[in-house]
Length: 301
Image (cartoon, rainbow, N blue to C red; front, side):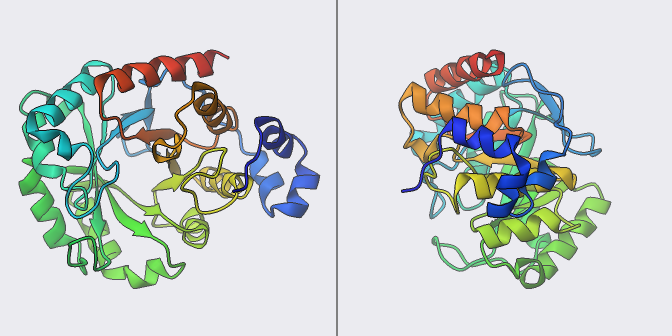
């Protein structure tokens, strides 16, 4: 498994000419003026000019998510609700959901205890057959069902879930067109995709329709789509192009358990301005507290 040290990673960013020869676009992306560096995991960051402001850290609900369940939903209703309430009380207002995870009805119950107007709900449309689900071919019926399952009129952010084919914009054209129409009506506020291949990520970084990108990034190449420096170059370009980038697999989907490993991943992601926000699938309140404190340490350092 390929790994890149923090020193190597930052050297690649500092010396654009040499990096550009290995990773095309790296030097140009380095010219991007980084966004204001957050001071905490709960700082609010606006998605473009949408008016949607999210905490820099999102509470994920899809750890080991598949077939309408995840580690979060397997906590049971009370466990799920208590976890979401703890995250909200800790300053997180950004909740990462998906049809594939089965987390909608659980979040609906959590919203009985959390003010809907104070949170941002993100969900994802699953288009590929599998995972115990029939792939969606249109967005309107999916969004209407999501609204019912969540008990809300508005889905703040909706993504095309798990794109891997570089032709995904054409393949998912109807879903994209209908999401655009729903956005015009105010039913959806922000649209985008979650990427699961380098090729799809490159396309998303340049695609005018895509406003928000979920991308897998850490410094150890755990559960990622390519080498960290290569992915980093694309993420920098995406941000230069005005895309809002949310990093996922920051802790390698649970593989990076040592504090020093999590430190290295956070430093690479945050020090190099690769993301605007990040999502982590916490399953315990103590994990939320630990990461909020941990991220604060990294930001100070």
